[in-house]
Structures are given as structure tokens and as C-alpha cells.
Image (cartoon, rainbow, N blue to C red; front, side, top):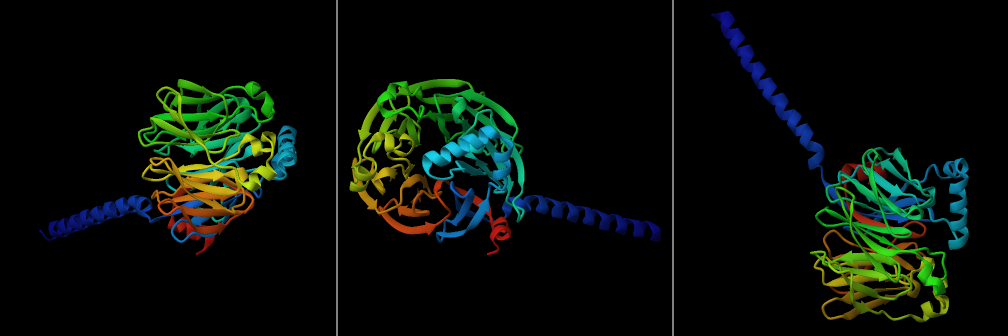
Length: 403
């Protein structure tokens, strides 16, 4: 009896320990998912090959991560890469090595398309030295705009000189598939539900303005995001620059090569249903007197839609200003002057602010949509361009920047 009693108590204790272990195991599994996240604006600095991390709450730059540690090794290994790099350096007056960037939804991997290195590379942010964990070389010479699917399972990147876009696994870099685009594949945007990809092409930027008809296909390619089959294409007379989409994705607001302002495109028909022109500044008229002097054919390059869908924030690149336009009133709320060649725009995750990368100013302007006022200007690296609001776990930011 005493032996059986001891065994019964031991069995009960074992059951309790197993239950406790199960609870601890479940808590440990849930732990990483429940760790606090912070909203960050990541900014790609094209000239110094780094990414700045900006705290979206207090608008401070936490620090930079180098995403081109292998730059000179790659240029030494591949003469074609070195040639493209040198041509761009000469043509644009400096290094332009980072094109676009995303972060996986868990905040662990920073993924960059690296321009004339012709590749996409991923870096592990959870380790202080941020090692490269994979690299995917594209068939063409130049990697361009990217986007990450809403569920975080895929990324899409334009292979500009190959007139194609490739879809990759963000955690392994493995190629999932590809699809054809127009000439000089450029922008990529996933639909809000993740079912479609919008790819915009700009045509050959090396063909001069007076030979515009020979620049190739300037088109919007709409693709089934699962099968990567082309659903439809729309042709335009100018290259499609940054674009934004209304909530139900029936309209596209887009900037076009050589034009100040934007067009509104009906996505069911491909027709341009409206044009909104913005003024030329004295600076723009003086410094960019002919369309062939525009940077890569773009007059204005950067667009973001407010969270409520009522206003657009536009980077007036050659005119050195930022404009806030009320879409319903069809009026310009404000023009913010004296910014250094604004070259990209993004909307904060809460929809309140527009972040504008000032490429010659080496800083980012924060503009409030509601008031059309600049509320902060944040120093970053050299020649900031593409940016993206993301969420990153607090413990990763502490590991990276020690705050």
C-alpha cells in the first residue's frame, strides 16, 4: 500500500511536471511572436551602400547597416558588373549602389536590391555584425525596385535590362518564378490583398527625348501573384514613375517621365482620366533647362497617398520642393521649398505622415498630411532614395544600435 501510494504521488508529480513543461514550451514558442515591435523607416543610401534606421515615433536616426560589404570584391570578380558600375558613376556623378529594400515580416532579415551589382542580398539583423545569409544574382546586369507580399512569403524584383521581374523566397533567396514586363522594368507593387502584382516599366532612359517613340514599351503589367501569369497590360506614351493606388484599386495615381505632377489612370480600362500639373520652380527651370538633363528622364519622382486616401504627397525632384495635393478639391495645399532634390516618398504606417528622401540634402523630410507642414528633417547617409516603413523587434534594434 505504501509503495503504491509513493508511486501514485510520483505519477502525480510527473504529470504536473509534464504539464508545466508543456506550458513553458508553448510560452517559449509564443515568445518571439509576442516580442514588442517598433515602427522604423528604413532608408537606402545609394551613394554609401548603407541603410538608415529611423525611429518613426521620435524621428531620430538610430544608425546605419552596411549592405555592400562585398562591393569591391564583386566589382573585381565580374568585369560586366564593374563596367555597369563605372558607367553609372560617370553618368550620375557618383556611386548609386542601393536601389530598393524590404524587411521580412518578423523583422529579422533586411533584403536589398543592389543596383549595378545585379543582385538581391539578405542580411541577418538579429546578429550584431549583420552577416549576409543569401545572395541571388539576377540574369541581367541591374536589380531595381522590389516589393514584399502582404503575407511576407514572396518578394518581387525588377531585372531592368532583362525586361523581366523575378519572384524570390525572402528567407532563402530561391527563385519561385518570373514574368515578362515592358522595356526597362521598374516599379513593383503588390495589391492590398496580395493577389496581384503591378509592374511599371519606364522605357530606355538612354534614348533622348526627341526619340521618345523609340524608347520601347512603357507599360503597366498586371500579374496574378500566385501563378505569375500576365492578366493584362496597358501602354502609355511616357515611362511610369512612382505610383499609388486608391483603396479598392480601381485608380492609379502615377508620375510619368518628363512630367511635373501626376496622372490618374482608370485600372479597369487603362485610360488616363485626369491630369494634375504642378508648377516649375525657378531652380528647376534654371538647372534643368532641357528634358534630357532630367535625372533618368524623371522630372518629379516620389509619391505617397495619405492613410485616408484623400491627399497625395509628391516629390518635386528637379524643382527642389515637396507638394501636398488634395484629391477631392483638386488643389495644392502647400509647396515646401528648399529641400535637396527630393527623390522618393512613403506613407507612415498610421497614414499620418509622408516621408520624403532628399537625395542631395542627405536627409529625410517628415510632412504631416493634415497640416501640409514639414514637422521634422532627419539626417541620414549619402544620397538617400528608396525607403519603407516597417516593424522591427525591439531586441533586434538593441542588438544593432545598443540604445
